[in-house]
Length: 133
Image 1 (cartoon, one colour):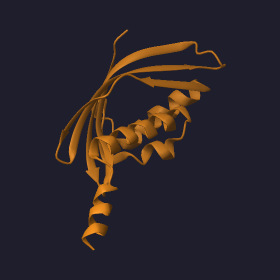
Image 2 (tube, one colour):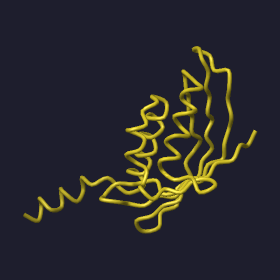
Image 3 (tube, helix red, strand yellow):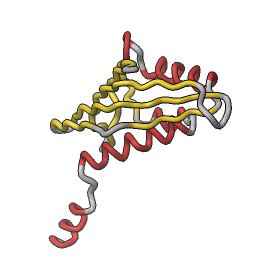
């Protein structure tokens, strides 16, 4: 029994690794224009710029996706700070978009995010982004 408990404990993904995987999943969902998959990792009480809530954030993304048939998102290195069941993650994000296979719009942002574990999963609770170029 002790060996079984030890093996089960070892199979659990470390918090930072799980958080990085969640962010990668959200990045893929954004590029795939899949708002349902993206929303799975956003907390019900999410707060964004200017009081943006979870539903407003989803509508914001829908408008971006309507304006851009093709969307690209490239993230710079993640700066992760873990504190118990919460985390802060900062990174740069290059967002591109356009109507064809070549993007005709792009912007680089400095992004700061807040996270917490809800039901054993990391959920985005806050986000801020500012254009850098």
